[in-house]
Length: 333
Image (tube, rainbow, N blue to C red):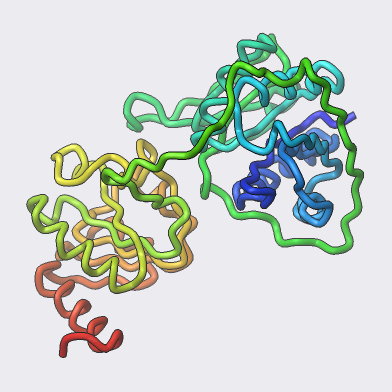
């Protein structure tokens, strides 16, 4: 019996990276508890190779629940499926990603199985002596970190911010069990069906999945100056991010906000322009591979964690970087 579960995510039969990130979290908890780790995969036509990849990335077991009616995420049907397998296998801990589907599914599921749920966790641990899941998340607008536990109900459930941890390296020597769970008609809620997808193009940005993020902060002085951030991000083939202060001032929309009260990112390259680097913002970028800071204040906190710190006026430094990128990309001289 597996006591720690993670909920894998798939789209069009392909696993999302967050599935492997969750396994890294779950592996640590399962090892501390001395128990097994399972990944629950709901979908259709997800190949055995994908399930084996879950095992190579840390799972001991994979519960495969495949049916054409489960190809697309429908909260009501997915909750029915999970309610059935939870009652059958009785896990102690269930982790899901704090994605749009995870944030929709897990509260609905928690009510169905009479469990507690802590959303948007940044850290997880096991309490010594009790085995309770310690779930840490930002509270009061990100100004404090609260650690929560649900000692009286099982399973203990939490959603985890995408990009807040790195997947474990694939280990070809790992072996595990793939368990096919049969789908019955009563596990499908016929009241809801997917007829298509709509992406809101208004200020849409997926900073969590971007390889390159160029972010602006209070040092830009006004919203109009985000134009140079957008242009630079385009030159790098990246997306635009922002500090909370820039968003609070109305210079740019919330989807761009990075930090404990925004998005957690893990790009290959992060460039922060005019961002001093509050604790909340630094927590949102700490897993970035390369961090570049542009700030006129030599004592800015972001400089201290940056791989490359440029002390200078953003309105001189960014245009110079832009000129060099234009030359590199074959544009203006």
